[in-house]
Length: 367
Image (cartoon, rainbow, N blue to C red; front, side, top):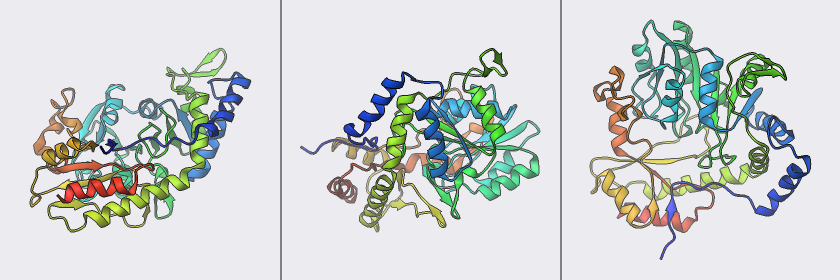
């Protein structure tokens, strides 16, 4: 009986490699509040990702909420319906109104033309998502932001180590927010980070993630508890050492899928972006007309063979009860996103996935 295959699994280095980190934490008795491993990981990640400043968080959602707080965003924020719900939830937690704009049919990222059409006098910011780690049209989005005086906060949950024109995509916009959840390319069990453009912004964010404390007796902002603990940070430091092999294996799986699925009628594979270094965080396919099964039937066929692919992202965020009453959430306003959400399946991709498993998925789809 073949073993179950999930869409993703966390990379777990050998347990014996983690033991020295745990022993040091036990010896230091410093478990949280910017301990030595926390400080080391911030510095190591900034170097690895090619950014100047980075603030670690306990998870990516708290980082999104805090990024909006740090930029004092008000009113309406234009964002995508094609993402994980945390993107829009972070807006509601800040009493902001999400305004959904449609996506590009080839990249699945926010369509800059649709962004511009959605701007009103109440718009103060844009929150795009680098979907599947594929870079947004950052130049076009920044041009719109500059024209209308808007802030840009990128949900870069999928974009760890992604570059565009040999520059980190995390440098785009005013802030970029990463997720280090266990399902991500780089993980710290739970975790996240905000990439900051300068030391002043990082200092404000560091205040906000620690209740607003500037020192022992001074609170300068209504902050939250968003700190990453030492065990998470230690795990991140260890995992960072393995990133070359993690990314190499993901690329190999991506290439194997592309070769094996090429030419299957009704299965559309997204081409790799030009001039971009990818992290191969997801492998989406679209089930289109001409394939003998509908998307949901193929999804069920895979599940019956213990292959737990995911329909990322279905339903759209705009379809959930807390959002579907918004004028911008109507399917007529989001025809491309609505179509893609009905066609997409993300196939399993993670470093421990064996070639034989990839081949089994391909054979089932080829039918």
